Image (cartoon, rainbow, N blue to C red; front, side, top):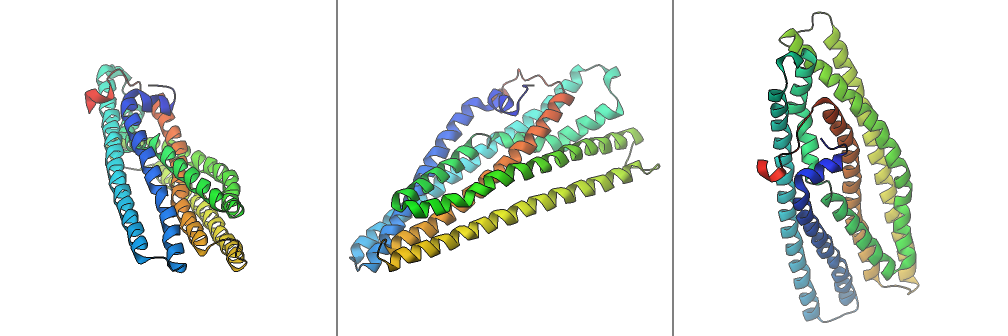
Length: 314
């Protein structure tokens, strides 16, 4: 197998990744345009513009919303298909590798590892293939487009929004590294559980070793939950501080006549539009780091021949 996760992604789905990337770029371009239309609708309404102009803007807004939804539908189906084919590829490759190995090489430990890979570990690794490139491209594209639009409308208010994310760039990687260490330990323990079941011929625990492993899994899972939800709490807190900053500065600008109410509405809508892609980007980063750990363990445990291409197994 390739040494890196992305080497594996490219080796089995390179052409498909290009097509998915094109859809991702198209999606974030279409998804940013409604912010400007919202601003114009609000300004036309508050400045007593003609209703016919507002109706035309609403029609454009609905068409963009429809286009965005259809592109997102196609993107989600396509990249999940890629992920599912990769999962099947990994599982079948374990069977191929086992058939090529000598019977003497089999042991309870190796059988337990194969069982763990086929039943549990292949799915998150293969499933990540579909979003390995498209997800960061899409979410970073949305963030850059929306924040750039905000800076164009009102630079100082745009900086308030940007500042919301600076602390998160620091604490998210640190907390995710702590999660990764626990995930790696969890996989090792799960493999030991599988090997113990294979060795005993069933789920028996005469000596209490399996019970100790279950307790260790419980502790590892709880540690992951605590770090994960603490990270979510801090991210949500920073987002609310961003809303407060927009209301404070935007309200002052509207009262003093330095900006229009539509600009403030666009900023509030824009921050909401940033919240989801930022959260999705953080989730993708979590999945990336965890999947890198899982892929490394699979690569080190199974000698899989990657000469069979993605399309041959699709």
